[in-house]
Image 1: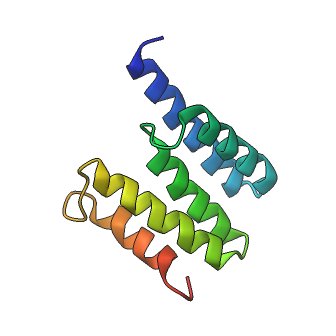
Image 2: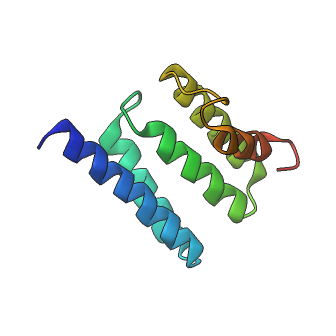
Image 3: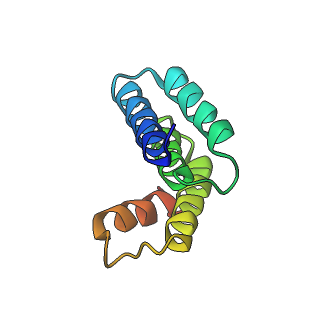
Length: 103
């Protein structure tokens, strides 16, 4: 498989987890995200997207500390790849909101 196809499949996996969260199928969403973390590895491309969705899932299920952790990690990974708040203002604003002590 090409790297492009792998990345597309990972993005699709994150989007599937997001749709599961929207449907209230949170355990399935978490399973999907955990599989992606294992597949991607600790510094692999796409991990920021996975952690971003993991933060959203934690927030949606009343786990603000977990949401804060994953939002901070997602932001760190995005920034390490050269993404900035100027380029993605709404994404970084949402991550900042998820990382607030009160969520």
